[in-house]
Image (cartoon, one colour):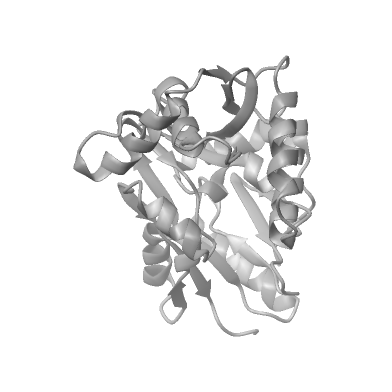
Length: 295
């Protein structure tokens, strides 16, 4: 039986993982090293290099691991067969998350498996030019918010070693207005991201009004044509701050990517409404796949 040496990811793993992720060309937010690394404690993320594949498993509120569809190259049928045997040896079926195209491929290869859409996990993917320019009637209200914000004395800077502390300042103020456990967890992950910002190869910006930081955003690429925004936080003192930091980032720092992936809504109605209001070019669909059987 095949052996898999799963372990917690370390920063040094970025060197071998990123090339395999880029090679696969997946646009989903789960196919970014930074995402896998900073959420490792929350979701008990474990990784493994097996042949020329990058494997990832997590345990989200379950004792049974769920695997991400592998990134890399080679015989995917043989790999999945080996993973099924690995899971069966531990007394449970193979569970996996995959995008729409990979799910269809798996269903063809392994008849009888079940696939259920994870709507709460669908990524919202936008044309970068749409977010940068906000043209047309569909963005009329966004332009109104933006113009209102631009009446202030504002500036936008790329995050660097001399201003990254401003992100922590905004994050602390953003968190002070809530006692929500999920937001506290999210803030902890953002802090970890900022602490390892440069080692993770992130790119982002900070928005100021009257010299005071009001918003920040950052992320990393997944596919060669796609940038994934991992975090975006703004204070509510100035109307349009969220719209402005989104627009300025797309205009100044993501212009060399065709798409911007702003991740999922996690089932939040408020987030879903907000993300739909920017009119995604498409949704990067995700599916929960069950392979069945334990023998």
